[in-house]
Image (cartoon, rainbow, N blue to C red; front, top):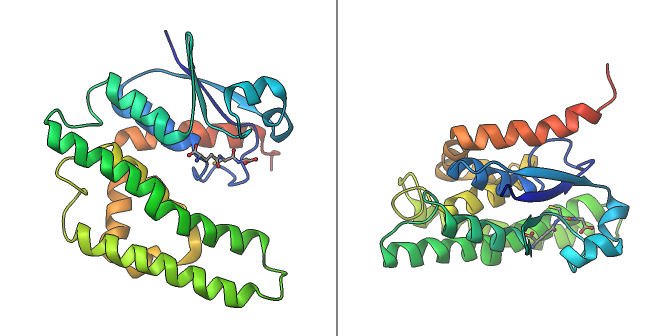
Length: 217
Ligand SMILES: N[C@@H](CCC(=O)N[C@@H](CS)C(=O)NCC(=O)O)C(=O)O
């Protein structure tokens, strides 16, 4: 059975692959699992049909037969458990890769999202510059620690895993902030992820949604 995921009908990132369906698409491509996509509008995401799939009215969701999932990390873990290629077979290496999945989502993504939300939505606030300085510091602390751990390795723990997949997508959310570029090994790490054929296929698929809807000219 082919799983179906949901994605934005009109992604605010204009096809830059920052929405969280991108990471799920990438996981599917890494393991060679075909998938369908149902596009949803912002208003549809808040309606009861979608809320049954996702209690917080967000994307992505995952449906396959009787199973409905939400949370990109849970969806990727599900894919990784059912297919070879995203988690090592060795039990300890597998546990460490799962720890990196949690680290990406619980420890690295929050300061990055807080920073981008402040840049996007709080520019007009009187306290914006002060708050931004704090948030930038928090991002830099995490990037510095991650950079130190990665060192000159290609991936976080041996071979490429779902932990790297999530970490790369999380770091990409720094966008044009200029923060990632301060850590050349992290920039190279993200570039290595983006160079993977599975990443490229996933990126092209989500970009096609945007270009199909963008006005011509
Ligand atoms: N922790 C969730 C976050 C999901 C999330 O924030 N989705 C965004 C798109 S990337 C969304 O649907 N935003 C619209 C909204 O919250 O109304 C996950 O990893 O799946």
